[in-house]
Length: 111
Image (cartoon, rainbow, N blue to C red; front, side, top):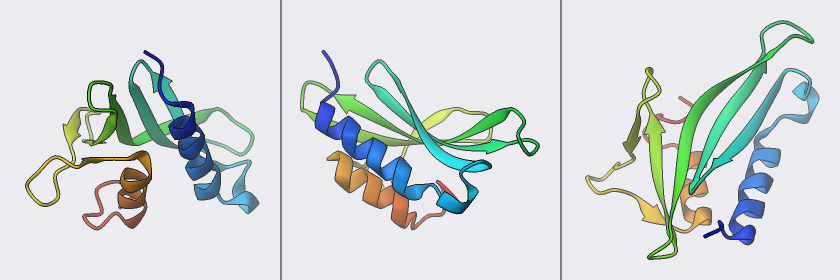
């Protein structure tokens, strides 16, 4: 089962919109697809024009049986945990979950 193309397009647009244009050679938001998971990361150059490093800050996991997405966050050891700000695992559409990442009311994604 492939991930919905419209959802992937929305994630791409979110990443592009989250990347400051004036710092494009130093900082950008990226997404990486693996199976049914899409990992969001902040990529930075170590040195001007050097190698890029990626700090993973969120993950969306597609649930093919219910056709929705679940949101996860990574701890400092890159272990993934369900995002549950109100005591329940946040599940919904890509738009809803990206809005939650952007709002970041718990400061768990971008601080």
